[in-house]
Length: 146
Image (cartoon, rainbow, N blue to C red; front, side, top):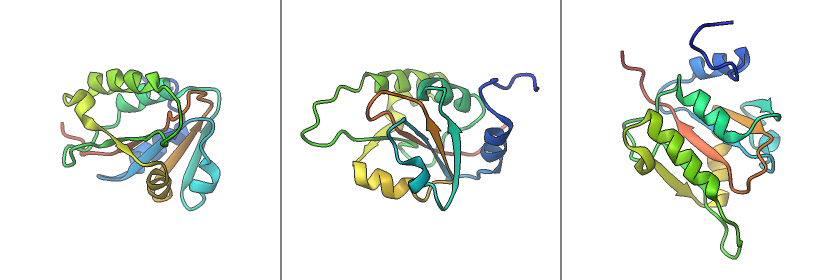
């Protein structure tokens, strides 16, 4: 065990976060996301017993968001015709605001199939047990500044 590291961050996930460089991306996916097929050329970490918000909060404690792009956080847009509410997005924005001064301004939306295309090039996909719909979030890593 380590001091100061959220316990939800497994050794495998910590290793991946440390390996990632500036502008690499990680996806934290909901339970419906096709993580294994999207991540077949990358790394997939299973965290089925956890929800996206708790993982997002833990990651952002050790992971800087990219300051060289306007929106280093991307959410999957709701498809036209879907009558889905996304209150979890507000939760994400509250979490992000704790770790990034841009708050909600750091968050953008990506059309569903473009999100899939970008997820295929992500360094890692974390597959969660999150049951909220459209709860996928992609983070772009920034530079660690001491």
